[in-house]
Image (cartoon, rainbow, N blue to C red; front, top):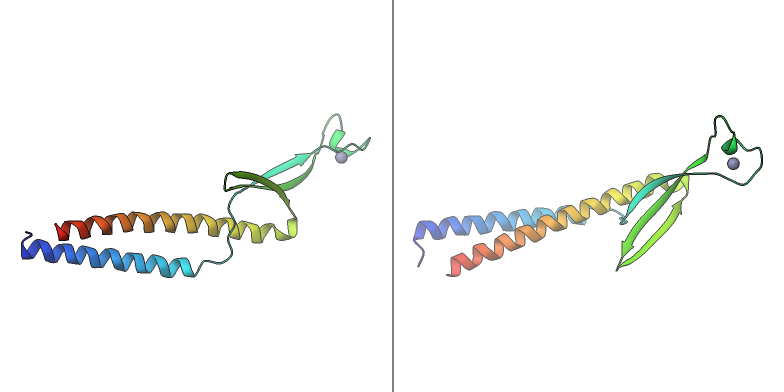
Length: 122
Ligand SMILES: [Zn+2]
């Protein structure tokens, strides 16, 4: 049996963990559109003769072109992102990272909570 003091500190710990989980849930509910993956920049060479990208001294390749790579259910996908939606995609990628970070925190807190409850019941 736990002493009353130990029990009360365990209850406090449980309450704190539950509060932090509630705060995380609230934060998660404010997240906007999200998208997994990462962006990479590409510069290309075209086939046109005499184009700036084939200049022998100062070749200037075309681009940047933004490519979005992500994996979903084990399937890798890659697609080009039009410049006019680049900003939006960057926001969605940042939201996804935040989503993952918050979810990880939630899992950690849930494990701590389970442990604290087991201790209390022991
Ligand atoms: Zn070219």
